[in-house]
Length: 399
Image 1 (cartoon, helix red, strand yellow):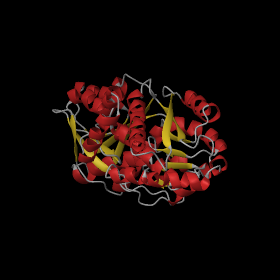
Image 2: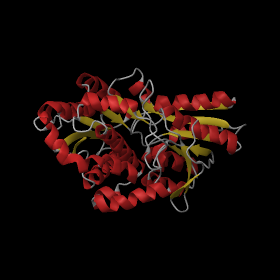
Image 3: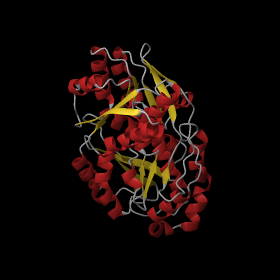
Image 4: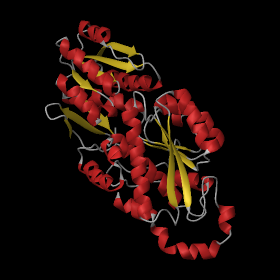
């Protein structure tokens, strides 16, 4: 991780030589959002509303990477700066926010791109602008299928989040004869999780007895959980976010149910773990980013103490790692362009990226494939409700 940051600043010692050699050439070399001293980035994040825990953390990760890069001299003599727009987790606001960043603020690239359906809503604007974009928070297959020439996605498709916990339940937790069920949000995000769940149950030939959608923002899951009980579910996947997961687990406990449970990566947020802890479930969490409880995550938190405000530091979670990784990956593409930073050059360099190390925060990042998607290996975690913490069950594994 530290080596990645150092590489970003390697051009600093040559800054004066570069300035003398290209002189007025800066004017013709620089692109929108780029000056002789600065590169302007943009982010759309859900910093209010039901997903604010995610958006605030993602923005904090970007701020951390930018602060660390700038402290090391910037990228070839230019500092990074970012503008953050809040979409409140509403797709229509996501579109207006990204249009503002591109048309009014004139940002060079996008490093924060909010939720799954929100990202899909923004794609036409992003494609039209031909702006370099890193998707690191919501790996929706629709983002890279079909391929968008300037869009790069970090993380496996959401269906892996549905597949990995179910696969582990069957192979390692005695559920080969179990009855499986899933609750999933009724949008693109939820359907992707459902696809992974279905793949796992079909692959192993186990019984899926309940596949139940719910409306975004739902708070009462009493009817859904009653159905799960009536169906005799012994293994359950929750395609839910933070508060929904806790609400479902509370209802399961109330009805005396004790299924093994899996969630997606949002389930490892410290707030999510604390909310769900009273139910007593030791649920599974797949993730392709390090957790707050991993040595690499803890190390990054130590760095964050130096560069982040108290409020941003308090928001640290796996989406902080996400924002940090997304930003240093884009910065690597910028670094490789030297003094002549253009969107065309950065896109070309990102397309070549192969096995870029994030210092253990993820597996190696590669975009040199037809989808320009870094399909990262996944680590499986499990909660410890007594201590409101998370432990690793596996290392990062490619499925």
